[in-house]
Length: 450
Image (cartoon, rainbow, N blue to C red; front, side):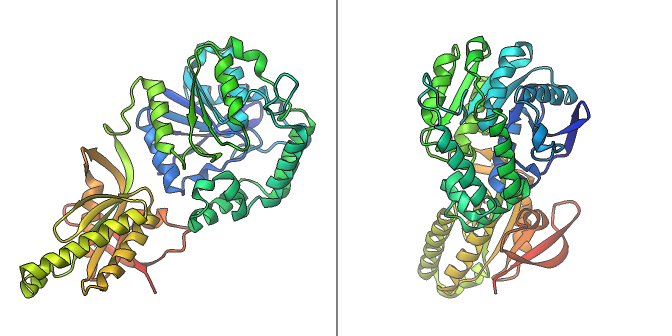
């Protein structure tokens, strides 16, 4: 699913960007300093929300110079924050985007405000998320951060950078997920080192180019439709800063989001995608009319016909009732959606392959307790949502993968294996298989459970 990385140029330096989906409309996304899209595409939730956005627009995401995959810059000669606008223009030109909705998150906010004010002919709309016109407090801006608090935040971020502990501060809604904590710590380390993080933030602070940025004077010049998204309990950007933006940009709409996550996608990410779609297209379809990415799980009771004949109707109904109760509980426990039962099995979807695999293992073990064995198959791909049901080739492939599984085996496609890389799930190669009704050869992998 990971898109190709392109490079725009500003003077002699390259600016990395990726595009997903087709436009118009275009969404130019600037997520602020420190990112690594190569690692982020490993996360199923990121992939799902990205593909959701790509269902109604072309998303153009870029890393400013000195961050992410763009060319590094000397810490003693960082470009001023105003040059962020030049970088955005260079990316749009390289991507052949004449006009776009600009979405600026965190410290990219002032860039988005200045872009909208100075490039109205290229601004279809402006989305400001968990950001502010000014970070530091001032006599006429009491809800900014005191300078000493900003200093403490830099020290704390540097001390915890690259560790699981920082997840509790940045993404508390997912901090209870051990797999996510390990992955997010790896993402942090892939972004930059703790020493470089501190040097970068200190350099910006000393140059009065980050915490002393004040974009308030440009707010009255913004004429583009504006949507302000802000967490109610955001630690790095108090809600009052989002309210200030909405009050000082003509016609701006403020949506106060629940939670305290710094990231937008893990806590209410579907709502955020809906709000962006409604803002850009005038309607909120919620992905219902489009294909979305999901991991599909199929299960099947082994030898169900023979068991039914041996047990008799009454006892077999008890077995099926126990199966259905166990299946519903497992799917709910692992954050999936039970689409339907299939008589002697289930079909369910998950936003990530790891959860689907663990659900399959848990269900297999639970049913063994009542003397019943199942086979489980999983595949990840785009599905069509159909009024409570799902369809598409992904569904057929998942069913065929299940059909290749041995009794008690959880079998997955190569796509699932690729997306699960980096987790603690151990997979054993089962070779290539021809799946009935599906073109080509498919490499399948069995989940090893000790």
